[in-house]
Image: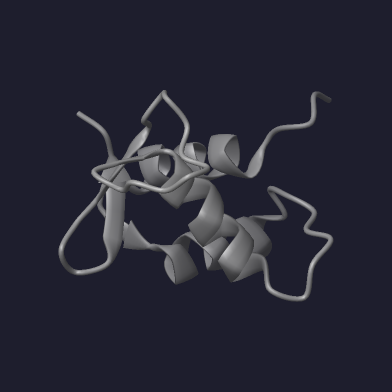
Length: 81
């Protein structure tokens, strides 16, 4: 089985949920379903960072060119339209 990135797994979770979710909610689904094996004490921070780097409207020095997510005012994320 091909190793997926945190961003790929988060994308899958949001597609399945069909509604915006917080980084904490996305992380919980990933952990509950065993979709990714984290090697950290703070998986939520890893998920949040992976999503923010790929979020439209979030300007960070380590942002990626390709944007997959959009951050909403209520700290939830959705798939980029």
